[in-house]
Length: 363
Length: 260
Image 1: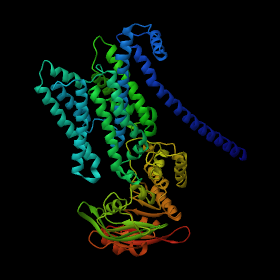
Image 2: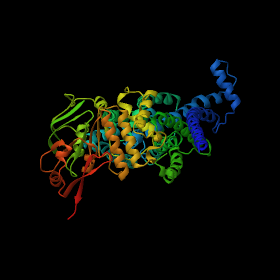
Image 3: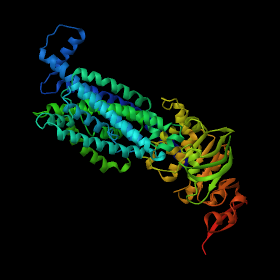
């Protein structure tokens, strides 16, 4: 009898140390996971520089990079340098920024609206930017003008949503009011876009508008990519700093308040930052759907819902994802496929997969 | 700490739901708020927690009017335990409890190891440490209620506001939660809770406030407020109050509703 108890005690000690070991292992696994996630965009970057219709093999690539860094005289063909530095690298860089921006904005919105079905254009940013671009194309603005108008209209649409829903008030239902108003404003701006298309010259302007709306990064210059960096840094820094509070906010307005959060101010900051990210991304890349909706889910599958890890992971996965999709868009087929179409083609089935699998509450 | 409501009136917008409410809760005391549906118990709670504007009167904490307090300052004094619910994302239980630390963090800070330790201690206090690594959306309703209480404890408030802490729980879990509430009060926390069961007032509270639709707000000791007459007037049903002996030989009151 005594022996048996002693054995059981020993057994339970064994179990406890096993559990402890498992816990340590889990912690270690998490670290490895973050390192792997961090390497993803780097790998995607390297892969993307060699891929494309003008294939650059790895050796000359190393040659040219080393030569540029060390200031050696050029031993490589000039076309190579042009393709790499004027076309390919800016495009890769922009794809990464757009992917990270849309994914971060989407992840933040899903927490803010405590709804995993929300995408970053829910408050009208994309619809507004689309209309802005359509108007700019109709009025024959240059590329910078189109981007600027799209950006301004994207911000404007969200501001309109925000002002209308604030005027309507409804204290406790503020979040629902905001989403519904966002849907109305989005629809409104989509109709404006349709109207613009209707009056546009069907031989020159209409195709330009249609192509812009399909989304793509083919006309990116290195200047665009650098300018894009500014609003994205401004938008993403506060989100990263406030990411713990996003956890608390996803439990709902009242609970967050009771835990000491000024929800009205926090919501305002998150909306401003996410709108800045979305409008900036859409203004250079056109409408690229689904990224902001599905990438946070992909990240959640890997890291779980804690925003301390989820937000950086969403950015890393989002940038990798969009670069890879853009590689496919520009190099797999004889003709370049609009990026927005490809992301939808990939996004929709993935989302169905999540719906089928999602009985466990979006793990 | 003492929380005091003086002639408070609460409601939505310009519509007043309940008025002339005056009561006090001290540290270590449990006040149970009874009353029929729609009488304004939740509205009163929302007002105490600062979700709704106080329409008239004042709410004082140790004599200080809380009207202009920031959310953060208020959260350090008053903790809120909502009804157990399912949030949209599958957080780990320990992460949920750690969220209670938010009021103690800087504006841009994330919880430190010390905050996690406080969260673990809160789970331990309630005897549910084994839940720590589980997923909040996958545990039972009773366990979730315990986790929400632990989260409020991690916030280290002096007053706990609990909105129907026993709703949606099975018979055993209701009593287990009440036992924990009694223990918390013994540790010096003041508790205000709502309940639909007058028996719960007998089981744990010293003080009872009875809200009624047409007549006055009554507050007092459980024996003087929870009477057959008051319950009949508040809920409109026949009730008998009896008593039984517990294992220590003390008399415990209970009320039995009667259907004629």
